[in-house]
Image 1 (cartoon, rainbow over the protein chains, first blue to last red):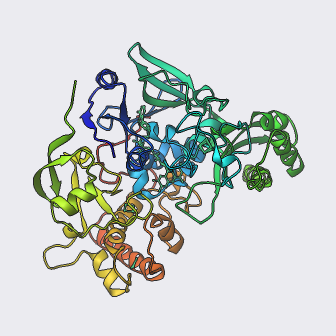
Image 2 (image 1 turned 135 degrees about the vertical axis):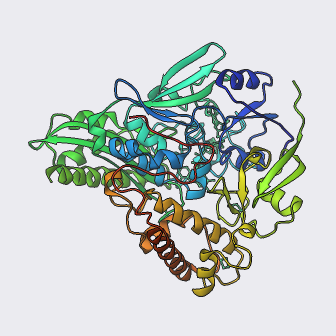
Image 3 (image 1 turned 180 degrees about the vertical axis):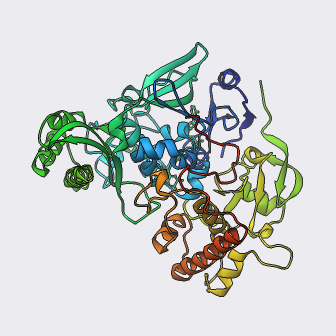
Length: 330
Length: 208
Ligand SMILES: Cc1cc2nc3c(=O)[nH]c(=O)nc-3n(C[C@H](O)[C@H](O)[C@H](O)COP(=O)(O)OP(=O)(O)OC[C@H]3O[C@@H](n4cnc5c(N)ncnc54)[C@H](O)[C@@H]3O)c2cc1C
Ligand code: SF4
Ligand code: FES
Ligand code: FES
């Protein structure tokens, strides 16, 4: 591991200006991803600015009913929060579906959004990887890719974003708050992650040197009836092979409002807007759910070894929406 | 600015303060084992994937292999060496003995630290991925085998002692509940919310 300096920031402006002192400086949240990647030489910062003592560890309800989640709120505190569990249950479930109790105690909201892909080639510095070393190639394309993307990948990179939390945030129209040398700014999550294109090493639209200060969830009554489901290779403590966050509001058999987002299918949490459009105003039937899933997945381009994800996601859509409909009827 | 690559820190471990100078790359796990001679905490994977290195940080369980020592300064660290009360084992340690919650014992310090925290997290009303209804009004779910397995899933055991580990945790949890009850402390949560586990640095709170 490369040697590095360490500093703790206690306020937001200080954090941003400390980071600016060294082009190779990075923020340190819980360290559960960054420290791991520093050990393997994937990340090599010269200076760490610890953000854990910033006053960004609160969850608050704004006047307009939006939920404001600080960037250093731990994943555990987020999932245990009564307001989150009541108003955005899929978010609490998504967080609880990720990592382990120990890791969730350490991991922060900001760090979770910026965690890197779990593509094996990315984590192995003896291998080429366009994301880690631009222009070096993408061995996953023809190699080990059973858990890689089926949607919106490019021949430059087929990796997925591994966050569970991000999937629920995508479903609920989260807005990311940031702070730069120019002051505070906001970035909708839908614009936060960049398309892969030919620059897979550039993952987000965060301005250089920006600190994530929090995430805001607009008030959304539909979110109160929401769920997260994750499919993985063992019962717990494993990344998703496919996951879904769904919220549904049905009246007299008709879909009034619906939110759908998928995990482990693309380089970013995948908001399924085509499926939502197909469903809204139509019948809440398994046939309609399947047709909506098909509408979304028509753009899927599975690789040789991850074709299973297409029916997996389709089945998740039908099962989750059916369950939510039944719950609605009760 | 040119901050140094090593730091003089003081670590509070099991109630004792240790002053040491560490290379900033040192993890809390290595600081405990190599600098403070507390070798009870084990290194399995060194990547957050096994839980052998679990300690309590400000009362909450954490993987010490991904925690930089320098970032742990100012926080209270509890290791397996700090669990017993003098000669009296912690009830979770005793339960692991009584129910044979191990074979080789390598994962055990991490299992015990994790289980101590699991019991507190559950008592504070934290839901888990195994909890069917996570609404706060519903209150904490019974700590059945499913819940224990999910909550303990961050601790792998290569000997596969899981069946006995689940029994040991269930027994220790039942004892802790009985102690709380006799102390007149009724179930923490009931209607009002998540409760709090020993709030570390981050005490998330809702101002509703
Ligand atoms: C064994 C294991 C299993 C896991 N399983 C899952 C899983 O199933 N599902 C899942 O979703 N995740 C999983 N994770 C990943 C885990 O959720 C992330 O590592 C964690 O959320 C990262 O948060 P952190 O605070 O520790 O980030 P750090 O490691 O501290 O930082 C990650 C990145 O974010 C940057 N950063 C941190 N905070 C800020 C900020 N405020 N502003 C700007 N930049 C910032 C850092 O510079 C760094 O680049 C797993 C991790 C491990 C080790
Ligand atoms: S899929 Fe992306 S991360 Fe994986 S090897 Fe290819 S370029 Fe690298
Ligand atoms: S040694 Fe820390 S999790 Fe394995
Ligand atoms: S007892 Fe041997 S690894 Fe768990």
